Figure 1 (tube, helix red, strand yellow):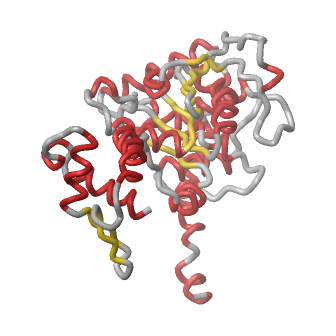
Figure 2 (cartoon, one colour):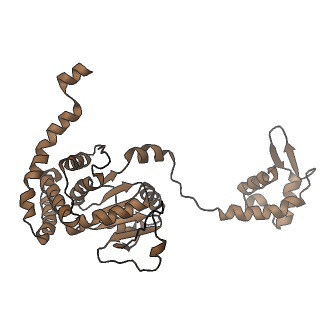
Figure 3 (cartoon, rainbow, N blue to C red):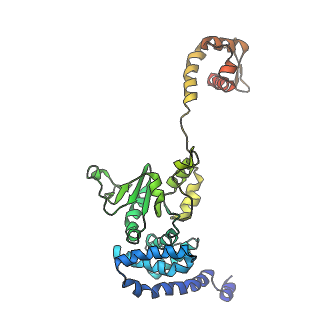
Amino acid sequence: MGILNKILGDANEKYLKKIQSLVDKINSLEKEFEGFSNERLKEKTGEFKERLRKGETLNDILPEAFALVRESAKRTLHQRHFDVQLIGGLVLHQGKIAEMKTGEGKTLAATLPLYLNALEEKGCHLVTVNDYLARRDTVWMGQIYHALGLTVGCLNHEQSFLYDPDYKKPPEGKEKMRDELGSFYVVEDFLRPCQRLEAYLADITYGTNNEFGFDYLRDNMVYDLSQKSQRGFHYAIIDEVDSILIDEARTPLIISAPDTESSKWYQEFARIIPRLDPKTDYEIDEKMRAVTLTENGINKIEKILGMGNIYEERGIKYLHHLEQSLKA
């Protein structure tokens, strides 16, 4: 393999050489974009959308879009995308997995392809591992998107938000809000509560894999399409992809509800079973561990319930549950 690598070259090195021209192009635009006013930066978003409508592709506008996001980050967060983050953004835009080390700024790198793909106005998702990170990154990175005229939503367990720089959370209850470790306060200023649908209608939506998954299941249970929250699956970036798609994927997402009918039946069974005679009303098969009602037992149950034919009025399912109760 060593000889082959020398002859053919390392695949990653080849890829980096291939995209270096894009990185250089983005860097060459930096001085030009530094001269734009804040209003001009926001106007560029509208221009990009119009160019896409006229037939240009995302790849056509990619260098300018990435340069625009970099300039917005410099002004809002006072952070600049370095080449390693530009490369990470290019990799993610192309649907590949980017392994970035701690400190290389993956959160900032993700803003580049998210902004670019959001220009198609079909919604983009950032899937993260817990509610706290979804809130934090919405507020943190939301400043970049907001400065460029995009909206940002956030999904939490039984909560939804929109990034709003003018929103202030009411003071009551702030002292109780901590992250999972309890190490510092997490004040939800700039996160305005909203309906689930509003969060999904945002240009970019941050949330956990479970929230996206359960919303998908709920959408498949609605009686009318107008009740759905999600609007389709256009583009997504998955944080900690190995954990979410391999480790956590082993645990299925299940939506369940209490069976009120069965619960009512078992209350009836508690009243019926003590009145049955084990000698004449049901037969026990010890070997098969089964209990079967006799004709005499069925007649007695019909008298207790005041009905003529239990099969017609309650069905075979009812008798099955009754026999299971006897077995227990």
